[in-house]
Image (cartoon, rainbow, N blue to C red; front, side, top):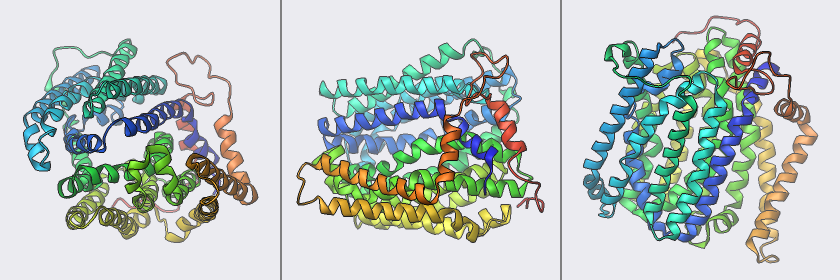
Amino acid sequence: MAISAFRSGLLSGVRWTAAANVALLGGGLIQTMILSRVLERKDFGLVAMASVVLAFLQLFADVGLSNALVAKQDLSPQAQDAVYWTNLLSGLLMSLVVGASASLQAAFFSQPELTPLVWCMAPGFLITAAGQPFAMIARREFRFRRVAMGNIIAALTLLPASVGLALLGAGPYALVFSSQISVLSRVIYYMAAERRYWFPRLPFRFRDLRGLLQFGLFQTLDRLCSHTWRNIDYVLVGRFLGPDPLALYRLATELPVRPMSFITPLVNTVAFPAFARKQADREAVRRGVLEITRFLATAVFPMLFGMAVSAPLVIPVIFGPKWTGAIPLVPILCLLAATRLLSNPVDSMLLGLGLVRLSFVCNAILAALAVPVFAVCATISVQAVAWAAALIYLSVFIGRWRAVFWRPIGLGPKAYLAVLAKPVAFSSIMAGAAWLTMVATAGRIAFLPARLALTGASGALVYLGLLRAFDWPYVTQHVGLLLRRGPAPAGAGEESDRTNGVSPSALATDILEDVSPPPSRPLNPS
């Protein structure tokens, strides 16, 4: 199972991406801890209602063309100009549509306060559209440091803006305006940093988009299905149960996702192009999927398992006592988060192999199941919705095995479960130790933060002990790859993003040339 070059590739982009994620997730956690005590639960629920609809409309804002700036490596400057101005016009159109539909959204949720809130959120489409192409081109050219710096600036702007507005009594508008200020700061940085390489010019010609619109349309349809099943639960909980249950449900859903949102971008940075280069090498892709799965499970499962058992301490300590209603939801939604985590390498693999139709079908099935089931469960309770979300996703993940794993890459369940055995076993033992510590300290320590610290420390020590005893070579190899620094490549300047002393392009080539032996049989094109 050792695939040193592929492992190195998974960890090569850690430095700048990790720095940006620390800023984004850390700032977001601090923001939530403060605002959850300053703002009312209804404020969060109102913004959640508006955000669900706006996030859905965001799928159409760029007509799928932003991803084309990365996927199409040979775009002319004229085509890039056309993509930028089309993106900007689309963002302007979506801002106008959102503003005009504000009253309809308020009527749908039976919340009149949503109308002015949505008006204030509408310009976000235009602001995002102005900067997104710069970020995508920077990614294509491996200027990851600039992308990361934009995200860091946005995180550093968001925290003081949101807290300051909340303390001034802005209510839900503190969340709205601080988000737009944060995005605007990132857009300004991207424009200033990237203008030396490319800046959009006028006039532009729509005929320069030839060959890109079909790509964008198919991407949009796939996104649409994916977004539907990922967010329809928010819409229905808000519609049938109201803003307070929605706020609890959203908090319980997003809490387990935070560990994933730090780790998975580091993996996906390299996995997609690596799979794309080796799409004809069935054995290479199979091994790559297994390696990524093991890495993600080893890194994230202990956090998810620990969060599931320690929710009675995590929720009141981090978010305050008024959010204790989310406690029974957290363990259920940790199961959902674990299944979604395991889907990350699958999504990268499908895109890398060009199986976008299969990806679309899988997401369409999920959407078709989720909408009616969530509609029924939302009339019962928020717990019913949580269980439905977890079980539907797990069922589809298992049910699509033959189509997604076996036919394209010949991956059977035995090999897959083998790489999950240690992470699942170690995380389960760790969670048991954390639960015992939490129960043992219940009558002895009244200070909840101290109990949480002891519970987390006991679980961490047990997990590290198990790794030390049974899987230490795997851990030391990854830590070594993470910390290793090599000499800078000759001629590399500021514009060559360096990770572990290797330029990304050279690193990607190394991964793709040395990931595995030749395939035993050709890839199934279906």
